[in-house]
Length: 466
Image (cartoon, rainbow, N blue to C red; front, side):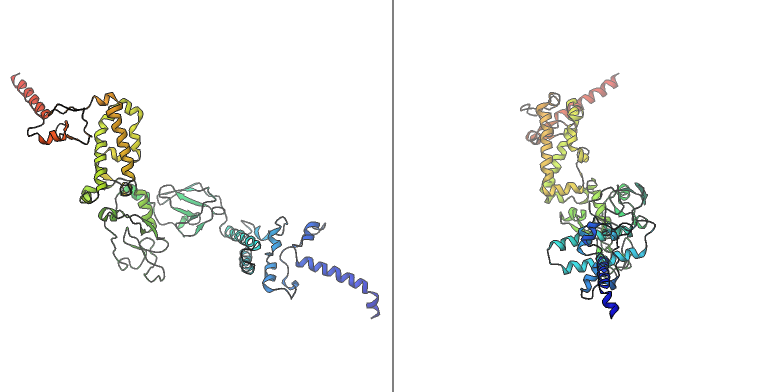
């Protein structure tokens, strides 16, 4: 007892120093320690403090949070070296399983802390941001960035390495989100198939553009279903087992092919189906699988639909189609004027139809995009405007084109006529132009055809006389 009394001050000083040491070990993010900096010759304390040093009066969840370095000071002062130690794991070589497990634990505790904090508070918002950082770091450790080639060819795909880091995309192979900030990903320049670098070797779908190049035609039967039993209860593309009950995977029908697909190959995307447009003049988007979606997108502007052969009765019920057909026929009648006109070639008037080159080649082929814009009225407006521009050049602006007009040989009256005028008729044999009323009221043959026949007979008789 005497020794204790004599050495009391020394024991109290020792106890005070021990308490300060334990306090420093317990809270490695102490602001005083940050301001003073680490003592010379000593390393700063790490965030992995021993659980037994925590006070028993502290809440269990708070203890876990402090143990994993998820307290408020852990994130609010990132200048301290040990604050972001959880987010500074090595990327390559020295990665161990414990690093990933530690991050998973930190994420779990961060979720708990978000639920415990007051809703919509600043601390909760900051904690959510920090949770995102932890998840990004975990994804980076699972999928470290490697040196990848800029171009890769696979199954007729031509993949190019993407440089965009901010656009959110979805991998067409694994259906997971592509984190552009930390993951390498590629896009096919032909069919726009997107995937992670790590999914490249798992791709089994050939490039859809190759199918478009070799087989440019649509399925013209409306939803040609064959049944799940004919598919052996498997996905039509990847052969994954499927069923209508969703076990083991949900069966989803593609309205274009009529077949069933798994949720990986069919994302419930919608598209306008050509067969429904041609047979029913229906433009409501239907659910299609991913491969059909890309195929229809690539085929959208290709003029492969010959309506007068597929469904000629459509022109009897859709007035807009009749109007567009007349405008296209007029454009074909104007084409010879432009081909021989120097001013028209210099003005490049035909470039106004560069997106629809088939309009200057024929009048019976349509693309799916044409039919969609006919239904909406956009094509009628744009084509009427182009028609007016072409007619103005031929009839008013260009003297050379005006000189190629016709005079009605039946009445020999009126202005100069052109084959694309609405009140004219054209002889199918010699292409002479007449007033419509004059042409149909005339009971004799075409005067020009009669002259040509007479001239031909004269030439034949001269040959015989010679």
